[in-house]
Length: 443
Image 1 (tube, rainbow, N blue to C red):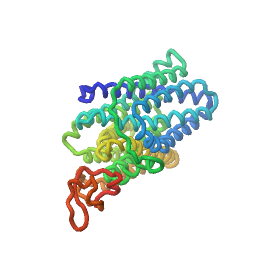
Image 2: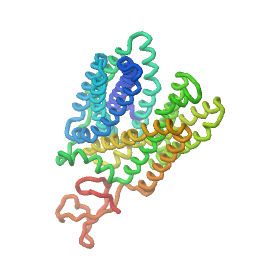
Image 3: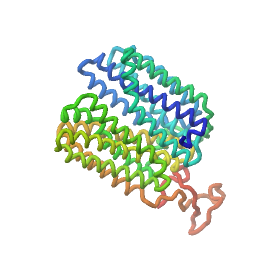
Image 4: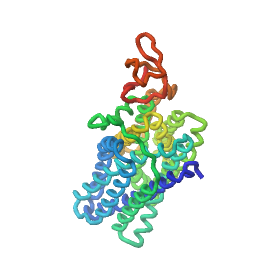
């Protein structure tokens, strides 16, 4: 059993995550059917707009939510957000206008934009041991992959017995169960930052994120993930149906191959991180993404049967590269912020990563439509290489936690208890994190 699951509090939180993700997966299927029911042939446009609204909510709401989360009891906030999400899910079967779909999707995703970073920031407080936390990150990645694989199957089985409206009921039950499990968990308390107010609090996570070299590198790696992932999520259906001439089942298999590759890689990450630094594992993952996309370019000229097997292999490689990048990410965020600042930093990561997807989703679709699949693979591969190169440059190999640095503070300041005075400045070393006393990274 993974070491993290031996912690009873984490077991409840992980179970809450799994049931909430299952509910979200059911809602994804039901939303497509609802859009078709309301809009008919315009359902694709409605869904596309709904996904854009989702990303806008993620990018815009997360930093504000992170500032709020830093000042409120986390358990109360998480339970409230689960209750809000359950209430919205119950409302969805009753809508009969497109604007109502858009409004409820925005409210649902805004709640998720507040819930997810707060939930992620809680796990490091529960699992203080590095090995346990790494195990939890692997389990979290696996939960997302299993949701992508299993939720459509669960939805299909349910639709054989009931209408799609009942899938939204399942979604509400999932969120309610998540809230109940969070209530039953004994969460540690984290003291809020007294100075975290107004605009400064809202931008706190972004300021920490963008001032920390390893996190700037992680942001570039997020762009690599979005470039490769958008190729998979946006263009698989067109490539499989129109180019390869296969059916809907083949589309599901192609997407499942991507999820399976991600799942297998997530299982290996804890062992890899015992042997290699986070930076090495994550940059190798970005390299895998770029190689997979570039290999896809010549594969478009193969015979149909060969192209199908190559597609499954390459999509699995994209999934694996994605997990190698995203699974260790929580370790970087925990290393780079004080405990009280973690909600804001997780919210900044949530917002910035989804900004990458907001850029890449339409770009991938436009390229494939206007220039063809081979061109889309090549251009997105080039974007992945550029992002990987940026990550390598921004996040240098020499990245110690403790850094020597100077201060211009009064001699009696409590922060200088171990500092030495030289050349008119105070100098000392400690684990370095951006905060009110350390506003920029040492040269």
